[in-house]
Amino acid sequence: HVFVYVNGELEKSYTPNFVWKKIDLSKTAYLYIGRTYQNYYLSGDIPVFKMHNRGLTASEVKQNYQSYKNRFNL
Image 1 (cartoon, rainbow, N blue to C red):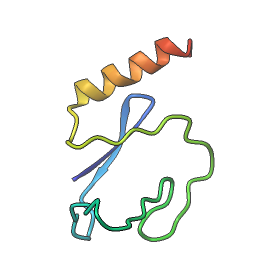
Image 2: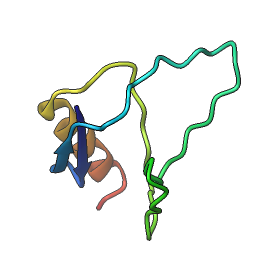
Image 3: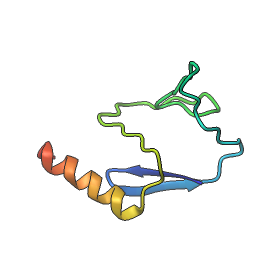
């Protein structure tokens, strides 16, 4: 399942119709940020991007957002 958070709030969740694969770090891999598998592109900026090796809880996402918000006086 995929969860999309914007400014610490759950924006959307969905089940993708493709199979997740573990990234083999011994090979070249590509990661596209701001682009979907259907080749739609984000219109705007992504000021902070973080990738984790596990799924975060909603509480962890909110805490993470709050720390950036406070750090940059947003």
